[in-house]
Image 1 (tube, rainbow, N blue to C red):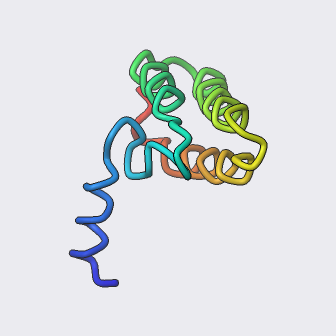
Image 2 (cartoon, rainbow, N blue to C red; image 1 turned 90 degrees about the horizontal axis):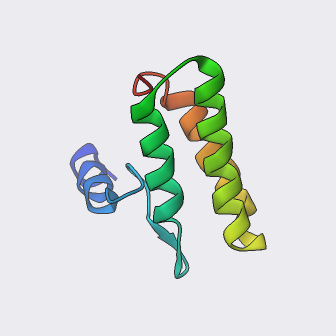
Length: 87
């Protein structure tokens, strides 16, 4: 997959969950992402970022038992790449 195709794929997925799908196999997780984004916009200290990231993970994992691996992937992504967007 070249960069342009990847960019188009990411933009297509860009709903409530930034750069990732809003649902997995029919299970909507956009409410989890919306709350995570709200907490990121609120900002604060690093402990507040940890809280927001953990809440996202737990919200996704709580939707269905089989979403736990997806929740951990989202958690790892926001812990790693969310540093520049937390205000």
